[in-house]
Image: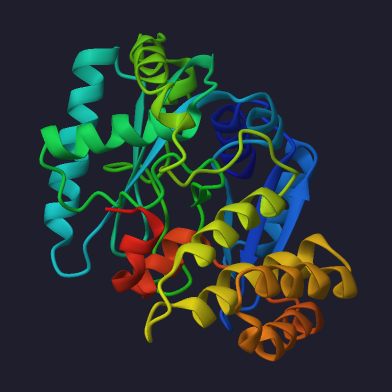
Length: 325
């Protein structure tokens, strides 16, 4: 059975390495690493699975660097109505199967929802972030997908629980819908390829001008291996535009989004200098002591930076500041 799972996972990730591997213990202690090949990936996953929650990036580091992608990832969550989440996930699955020749895999999350992968031929998207965001928002609206999480649309740093992993909170297995294990011949990478890439090219061209707009907060189309330095540009831009009112999330953004990324990307003195320089330029030096403490804490404790979708799900009242609907 182990070789069966190994073979299936190898084909599922289809040689796209190196990629990020994230391990979160039951005490919520995160560890993030970049694995160089499938054997390293599988060995680490096998060692941690059943003891910790194990995730990996949806896209490999090479895919992100070259702006070439082969799949879309959708997350359906609904704590109060799991059946609704499943019905809507199946609705999107049926849409892709009927329109794009069946390149779809639907999995149970192991807890409160479902995830869906739609596969296509490798495609290079210059305007990846906004093209995919607009496509996914249109699908959410047109197909009435109320439980589809839209906060990560267009985010190339998405992570997902690895298939066949145990959800440590529920104890359930993340498995394809209706099957405990996917027969090898049913894996989506073996399916006849469809034409979803054509639609992506249309959106890529259609929104090429919008992606250059100064009014749209987006990441640069280049990134380091974790993407943190470019993400910092986005978060600094957002902070500089926040109104000086109570409850605007300024200190929360420093704590969860900025300080941990500075601690990972730079030595501690450089991180403090960058933070202080930004605060001085934006007349926000009153936050300097707090921000330096958070940088030191992040460096000392190895604090894992929050993803933007996690941050906004925790503090939904801040979504308007981050250009998220």
